Amino acid sequence: MATLLSVERVSKSFGAVRAVDNLSFELDQGEALGILGPNGAGKSTLFNLISGDIRPSAGLIRLRQREITHLPSYERCRLGIGRSYQIPQPFGRMTVFENVLAAASFSSGRGESACYDLCIEILGRAGLLDKCNRAADTLTLLERKRLELARALATQPTLLLLDEIAGGLTEGECHELIEVINALRGTGVSIVWIEHVVHVLLAVVDRLLVINFGKFLAEGEPHAVMANAAVQEVYMGIEAE
Image (tube, rainbow, N blue to C red):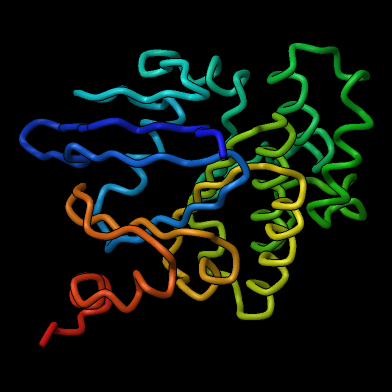
């Protein structure tokens, strides 16, 4: 299977703190990769490096073999990288439909009317079609998470970055989210997903990558990685024998 994303020996320092430290991994087209790590492990910094929100101190990032290391975030978006953010920040006074429309029009460079059908389709996939005329600031947490996902999908990504999209949801809401994400996988979208709710990741991803202090710790089949003694010690506080 063709490689979609390559992160090659990437590092990012903030003063004396190295948030990401010589990290490398690849993502194949159509694959879903979960990323785990304790708080402060460098997960969100890694996402910001891939999306172009910040630039690396060292290393290369490639999308479909094209180097994008120094491209701004809007160009990466138009090349097919979409992302959600850990804390949803929709345009609160705009409707749900208008939020998705803004993302679709920006990413495609097309007029708003040309994006209407796409937005309706995406709102249906995200389970928000019946909320399309609601102001975004009236939504519940689950609905705001769905809107965050819909806005990312409106950019028509080939690579979707999900940043703790299950955080704060109830168990039932998590199951609803799993159904939505698994349905997306059937469309061929590749996913990299940061999440602390481990069982949600295990229900979706093909592979897990665990990092700690910005460094590689473990990678592989999800259940095998979770059984790794080093992962259990660092991530779950279980001392290795």
